[in-house]
Image 1 (spheres, helix red, strand yellow):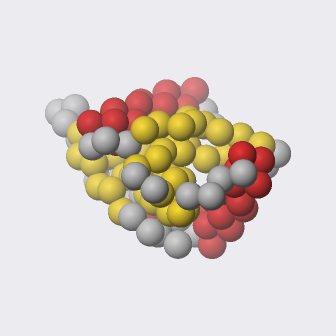
Image 2: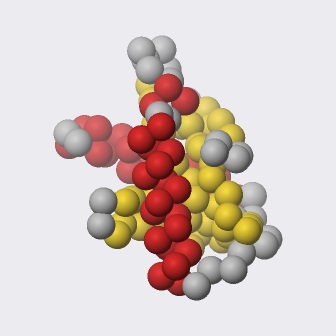
Length: 118
């Protein structure tokens, strides 16, 4: 990942994290990694543990956040979540979500939260 891409991605994750907190989610982990697996945000809301993929895009880009969620990404997210569950002996319900953060030329931010992407 290039330097600028990493900065934009981290900015999107910061925005997504704050957005979740404002809605009562407890942020358990950010950028959790084990082996080849990485989960952007792990958050608890009531009795559900959410594994959240964050995609940050510029408005009008050629690929939407949803376009970037392919079968490989789904497998990776699911396997990472199962590893996390096993390592931490999690008994909560699991859910896989996507937060799309879109920036426009004026610097405005739009957030689209999609639950149960798997």
